Length: 385
Image: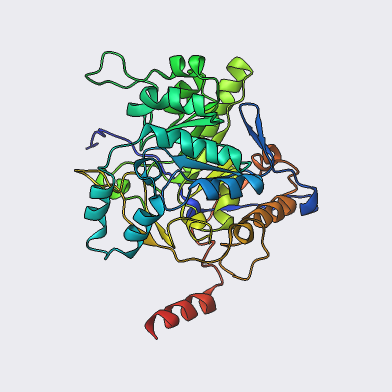
């Protein structure tokens, strides 16, 4: 007797389940090109820092720009709620684990001061940085005029899950096609994980899409809500939407894989899966310049009724330049991320990010443990000592 199926599941893959196949030709890593664009703005390296309060503030955004990347400031976080956000960040970093979420719920209940939106943007511009700022869909129309007036360069409309069609009680919610037409600066949106949602978002005229739901180290959406798609599959599906949209219109919209990265190898796998750039949180939260003092938490952590994140301790490892450019003094792949990407591109014979996206990838769930018994045993031994 055949049992009918209500749903058929397909296999999906995360970073640990795949591996990159080296090329038949190799390239000197120094000859690789890593640049990418958002709208008409060029970046030397395909790295973005998350719009999270423990990662990005004005100083971090300026430092990231000077290294060729981009850092996004959360305009609905402590930077725009408090005149002296450093004091609040210290309080969060020093809070006891069982008290920190309640503290953040209180901290983030303070009203957003529109004056500080302009102040933060102007401070980044004055320091020579590219000013990218993030708002939630619910507040984008409210704060957009202040964002434009202050001279921001990029607007990021961010939420746990973003779609082109949103049903609500509001008669006139945020309509991305209208926002993109009226915005004097590029608009990137996220997050999404499916082919259809990504394709619809691209058709609204956005200049970039963030890919990933719940993979971040500080995010608990996959536990609290049960939603998400592993990052390799999500990136492949959204890259397919990008290519279909390019075939239909001739317009190229970059996709940025956001969250779940632990090392340079994960970055390389995301690019091979089809990403044009990556957005990192916990790896950058380890930087001396990060405002979280070695702690990292997501934008949904202080939600008043259903927190979907947690504060994690990542520690302060080194300065931002060393994390990005090296030299590395660690063997875990958390330093010299740019060097790792260039080296991987070299052994794959990829001169550009577009070349890297064509590189072969295989399903390889044992790739991180194959032949590594000594490393594994030493790690276990160090934990028990």
